[in-house]
Each structure stands twice: as structure tokens, then as C-alpha cells.
Length: 77
Image 1 (cartoon, rainbow, N blue to C red):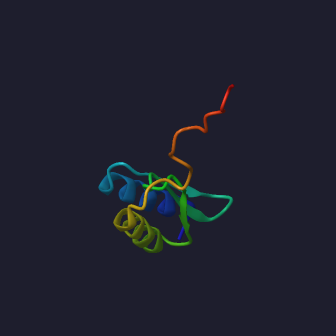
Image 2 (cartoon, helix red, strand yellow):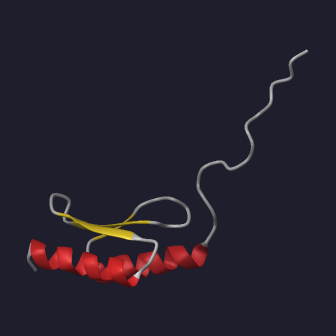
């Protein structure tokens, strides 16, 4: 497939999946998706593989991978 066809596939996926940004990297030859519940980008070699990984990420909904608790308080005596 040509780069143009891969970019078109990325645009179709993005249009069908609200909340996601989907790109095709010409240099990396990878599909990239941003918008996972945990904040991590998702990569795949094919559009179908990417879509499967996106759906799996949506199902997991485990929350962000970074710490969400309040900052530590220093005891100032």
C-alpha cells in the first residue's frame, strides 16, 4: 500500500472513533493513536491491528499510568 492509502486509513479510523487522534508515520511506517484512557500512545503496523489495540485500551479503562494522588505534604514544624 502507498503512504497515501495508509494516511486515508488513519483518517477513516479517526473519523469513526471519537476521542482519538490517529496518524500514520511515514518514517516509522507505523499507525499511531492518541486518546487511550491511560494516556499512552498506541502503535501498530496495520490499521486493523491498531483498531484492535484501541478497542482493547477502551475496554481496560484502568486509569492513567501516572500518579493521581495528591502531592506529598512536608511536615513543617
